Image (cartoon, rainbow, N blue to C red):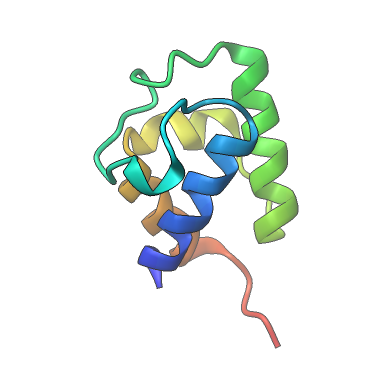
Length: 83
């Protein structure tokens, strides 16, 4: 499940301009520090994730996860069940 979410996250990062490489070239261990995202970009990321996964994600939650793979696991364990 988290592999699918990792792919979705790569696409969101690309849509927001956080990555310059093709989404498939971004490794799961990329850190948010590697993205050089400012606070406004982080807020945009949280909004995009909230819309996609249907639960509130705080900037602090994103930063605590540190890597793409950790964020994917965080989302997988917290998102609501879909009918």
